[in-house]
Amino acid sequence: MKKKKQYIGEGQKWFVDFLPKEVFNSLTEEERVNYQGYRNYQRHIGDSSVKISNYQKEIEKLTNLIKEEQFKIKGDFENGGWEMKVKMFYDKITHIDKNFQLNCSIERRDRTSLSKKYLDGEVKTFKKVPILKNKYGGKDIERVYKLYGRVENTQHRKQIYFGDEKKIRKVISGIYNEDWTTEPYEYLKDEMRILISQYSRYHIFHNKWEGFKNDTHNLKSISDWCIWCDDNGVDRYEWGGMK
Image 1 (cartoon, rainbow, N blue to C red):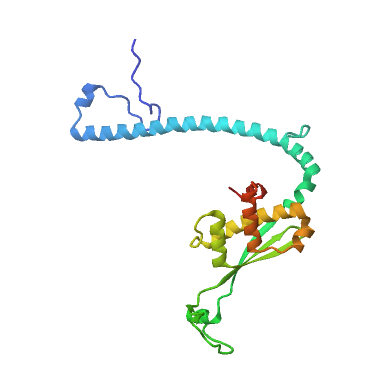
Image 2 (image 1 turned 135 degrees about the horizontal axis):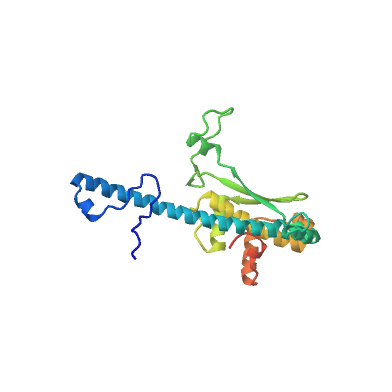
């Protein structure tokens, strides 16, 4: 016995049952167009309803899995989960980590000459009129930015002077063997933060904070350290930053 022909949207609102071929052929052209349009969109609704039902089942399944994983992490009142065990072991090793909890930042300061700022229209008036120049050493005056780094934690702080941004870009280009002369400043800033994080962690570990603060640190010392790492097989990314 053949089963009754069914449409995917059967039982839904505005449902019209299957029309026998004889009935369909008896329709006017306009009625056929309307019926076909109805049937197409009714099928779309039916297909989407099936997808929604499947998605809801998947959501229920994932929700249960999430609850299971959350229980593993949190546990319950009587049985602590992984989080409690992490804290238990963390309390025993936190002394190892204290020297690596660093906040490394980069500051950019505008050290452009007053002449250049006036020529660029940034300065309109002066308390005392300076001697304006548009060249220095036979070259056009350019904008000058100096970069400073700072390494700190809750107890210690060390500022590092890097110098002229153009020179920094050349040094970074040499370290990475890439052209950094035209990269956006934000990219340069991020790379400098990674470098001083690696550099500082390494030296603080080997020389403690007291030794680190008493040593001289600058762009050259960081560049030399990167070269030393490459020559001696030291993976500086193990000391911070991202590969």
